[in-house]
Image 1 (spheres, rainbow, N blue to C red):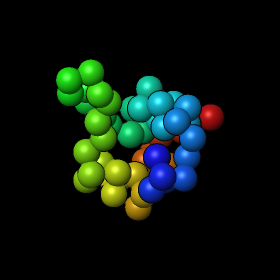
Image 2: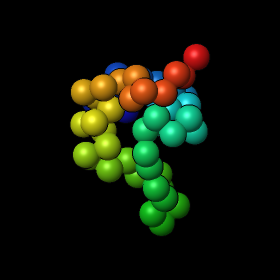
Image 3: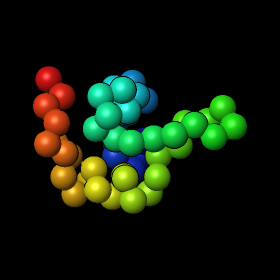
Image 4: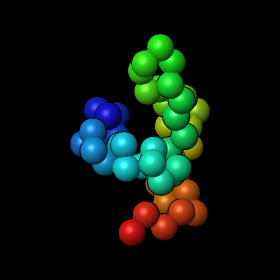
Length: 50
């Protein structure tokens, strides 16, 4: 979250809208580093968030 400078709620909104891929591992929500880089290079990702 610090890398994106988004709140926790915003990050979860991005995960729920599938704009930011993630997976669970041992009860923790993980975001692959390559998915984070892809999102940072193209924040809209072709998906309308609002």
